[in-house]
Amino acid sequence: MCCTPRKVKNMFTTRALQDEILKLKKENDICILAHAYQSHDIWETADYVGDSYGLALEAAKAPQNTILMCGVRFMAETVKILSPQKKVILSSPLAGCPMAEQIDINMLRAMKEQYPDYTVAAYINTTSELKTLCDVCVTSSSAVKVIGSLKSDKILFIPDCNLGAYIAVQLPEKEIKLVRGGCPTHAKMTVHDAEQAKRLHPEAELLVHPECIPEVAALADYVGSTTGIMDYAEKSSKKEFIIGTENSIVQHLQFACPDKRFYPLSKGCVCVNMKLTTLADVYNCVRGEGGEEIILPDDVMKKARKCIDTMLQLG
Image (cartoon, rainbow, N blue to C red):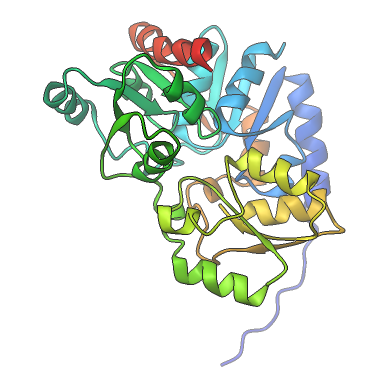
């Protein structure tokens, strides 16, 4: 039995919904942050787009008293840590990060007991609770510089073993203990995927995120953070690129550089948590009928901020 096509009813267009969001965010004193892995229709409504930590810094400087994070929970928590006086809303309450949730507070306490003379370095992709037990925090773009600046040569790195392995290659003088964890989305990309993409697009450079497995990173022409990948592609004289990070970046770069060609390393590199937020969610949030306000205990915010401040001092 075939289905009869539905007639298009009189409904909001994407542009009309975006216009409503732009109007309401101004009326309600809301700053919208969109992580790089959000869809482009959400990007077009945001005050700032980028990586998680960069967005948290922009939120702290923004004049608005309410911050809407279009991303995942640990990102909204980081915003709250750096802007405790502001109201912070997570656009989709279900949007978590599997990497951030792989280690709990008791597991980290046990690791610290096992390695008492190690400096604990946390990737920014961790919960606020975990950050309270860490000595320093790092981003994918600052990790090598920050860890290279630590006085200690013994580092316990959590939670991404792929980023940790990349750091270890760059800093062979450091003894870096890794835990078995990481981003399941980036870990899906295989050497076979990379080799196949290179065969299909022999003139293209391969740009990958350090959350990819080391064997994939070893094949890359450039390894860097999401914003680093975008900056590299935009500034490069090359015309074709294979993108080894979340596939939304392919679309964003197509808008930024319509004269260039961008190809996904793997069709499977899609973050389902990032895709939970829709333009309608953003609309409901700016009119006060959606999202979840992020509330953190004062002691958690103070303790978690220490490892972030150490990162700033070193990096």
